[in-house]
Image (cartoon, rainbow, N blue to C red; front, side, top):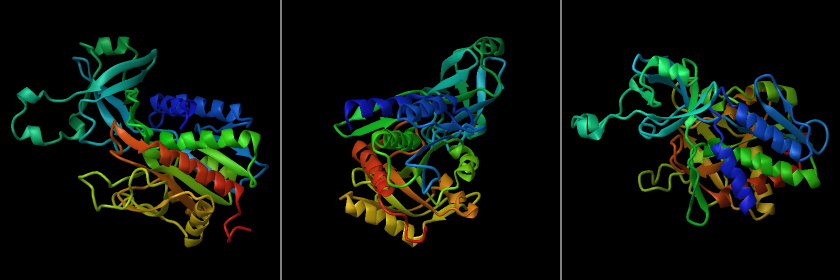
Amino acid sequence: MNPAQLELLRALCETAAPAGREGAMVERMRHLFASAGADPCVDWLGNVTARFGGDGAAILFHAHMDEIGFVVRTVTADGFLRVERLGGVGRRSALGSPVSLLARGGVVEGVVGLQSHHLASPSEQFTVPPVEDWYLDIGAESAEAVAALGVGIGTFAAFAPNFRELGSSRVSSKALDNRVGCWVLAELARRFSDDPPRLPVALLANVQEEFHLRGLIPAVTDAKPEVAVGLDITPAADTPDLIGRNSIRLGAGPAVKIMDFHGRGSLNGLLVPERLVEWIESAAASQGIETQREVVVGVVTDGTYLPSLGIPSAAVSIPARYTHSPCEVVSLSDVLRAADLCEALARGERPSFVQ
């Protein structure tokens, strides 16, 4: 990435936009699309759609804007905030992390409370307290002091900004899931501004993936695409603790999704039709773009609901380490090649079964 591209990724990651309160990201993506010459539409839920290359949408590229976070459920008399998680906040990594609360008067800083190591019993040092016992500390000494800061029941919070460069080609930050996907959308818009794609393309930055996976449905229903390609992260298993869990690794290119499956709760997942896999891999090969294949259990993204709407759905995933933690890590080369691959799809041929 060049310096301007890296700074855009930093700005996207440092924007606080927990699920259900994506307004700051809505404005960022609307501005980025408009700066590329599009006339973006923002629907009632906050989804931002931009069109390039003509009317309609032969291909819809979608990426969610929201991030995992917290919402205050009660305030204690002595000024602590009991919270609920927004999305799958990692239980092991969240405790002790700095957070930013979207208070009425602006951002209020805080931390996720963590029992003092010196006072923890031996058993407590090796366990994670239940979410019901979690709390945020914003430096207030009473419920009245909390209220004076513009914080109360229903205040949303996200992990605090912490973007860092690691070595020459990787970055660490909160919310790389899925600001890398939003970065790809913005990069596609920039490339399409002067050189429109061969096919009519819609770019959708959508809301509420982390909460219930369905925030994009109103916008997708309106766009009526012939095929949808989701842009999101996928967990890499190239660290010492995960070797063998899957074949995804950083720096080996974007992953072409074959299957994901949550395996819990709703049991949702996506099986990508073989012809769509071939379409994506053929476009990658034509441009010399190295790709991986993604088969993963424990992950589900918002493309899972699109086939039930009659929309063929595929996905291009960016490998990430330490997912759903405050310190996710990606390779910048994988992010760039994901944009190259999506551009190749937009400038190529329709999938064989789409007339």
